[in-house]
Image (cartoon, rainbow, N blue to C red):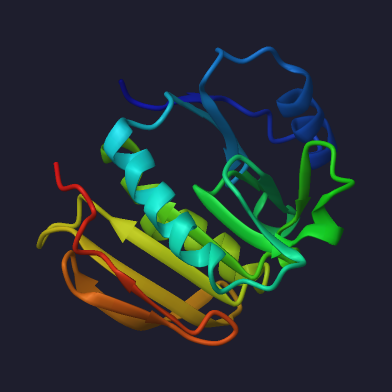
Amino acid sequence: MSALTVGHDPEQSRHELVRFWEEMEWPEGSKVEIIEGIITVSPAPAARHNVIAARIQRRLYSVIPEDWEIFQTLAIAVPSRLGMLIPDLVVAPLSECAEADTHIPAALAELVVEVTSKSHARHDRISKPAAYAAAGIPLYLLVDRWAPDGPTVTLYGEPRGDVYRPLTTAKFGEPVKLPAPFGRVLDSGDFPVD
């Protein structure tokens, strides 16, 4: 099943769009995001997608500070890009997120992780990194199961405007080193391949 988009009236304010996103009854289990001002409804990720996210999450827990948390379904707001995005993983200070109702400002995130889905790969490669960089999120990890030359893991950093610099790109099976404050090498050798 592929993603569905819901049209947005350009005359509608960002506030009205977010309120619609918050109040609408969306299909249970779906992932609903606002990407560049368009509401996108995607089916729940496949099992292999979730396995990759879970393995990354498990490895990150051993290196994050006690007052940080790893969230799987936390929406982050990027008003400058008309975005309400739900990365596969968000690493952020718990104290900043504990009181959040539906979302947090994206600038609170220290790291976001996206695992591509076949129908959503363009967003994870283009739209979302531009939004994450514009919000000043220090690190973006893209696990691209559907990359044209085979599955890859790319770590982006040093955001400027809406652009990241690629820090490392590795094929599945090769290690990816996360810099401080994580200081961890991620082994992608056990990521399932479709």
